[in-house]
Length: 142
Image 1 (tube, rainbow, N blue to C red):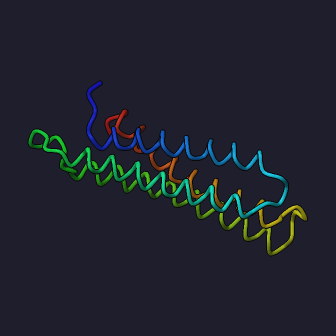
Image 2 (tube, one colour):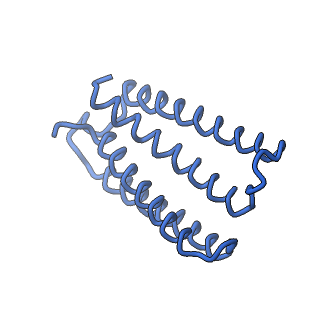
């Protein structure tokens, strides 16, 4: 597999995000209805997990490599920018749909716990989409 360090970072970040989302789903489905405090601690654990994973990746990537093997070039910046643009549009659309549903009270089941679930999956889903878009771009050779 001939891939850049930035693609490796995107893969590891995507896997960490999917694991975090699965862990959140597991914890959220085992909580009694409406219990938000334990869910808040789960969220803090996930944020700490993501910080640790991304820090470990950054440390590993900072090791000395052959010249030209690690530095980001214009192509890497373009791929990251394009992926972030797509994920931002999805996140923006999701948050606005949630706001519209809240303002117009479209669904009477919009409890704070359901909003927390929706916001969690929107933010982490947007990050996963960004990493997936980067991987696709690197695989295509864009």
